[in-house]
Image 1 (tube, one colour):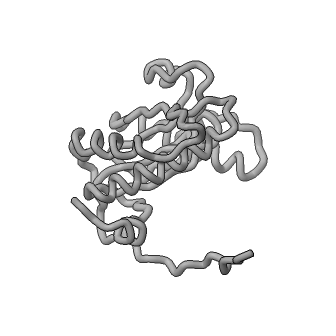
Image 2: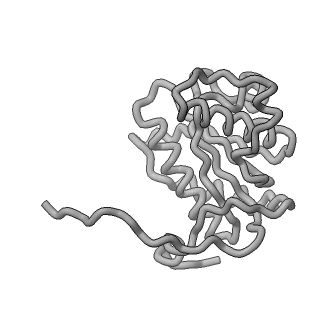
Image 3: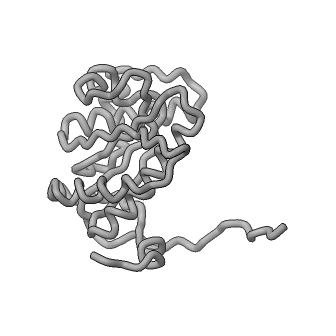
Length: 185
């Protein structure tokens, strides 16, 4: 789908209601390929991407992220118990696919690079007809076992997640823009 830049920027929404079916693997792969053109610090291109479509893993990582975010916001230690996981809702909104983005732990622009990549992935997905939502990362919701299974390089940390899939229900409304005025100096 060819759309204008303005249509992409004004049309994309953060979708939090996903249909159950997974998008075609080729479509996700094309969105990831296009996102590789995201700007990044020093042209390092170091974002490690893991596409997860396993519903059990998505549910566990999503619930862990919910608990970690609540603890972070409350200033509590980022330790998660099984009892907390059992009652937590998933931060992943039942999306059929999540792309976990990892970056080097000891790189000043790691988070910035990951979020620029995430936004570029969302715009790429929108252009291909996929719904998306960025979920901020707090702590290590992925866990060491998944990190090894996903071949995440040593010294990399999760930064954020991009949820992908078909939208369930109507597109969220456009919210009024609330940015403060631009100051020209």
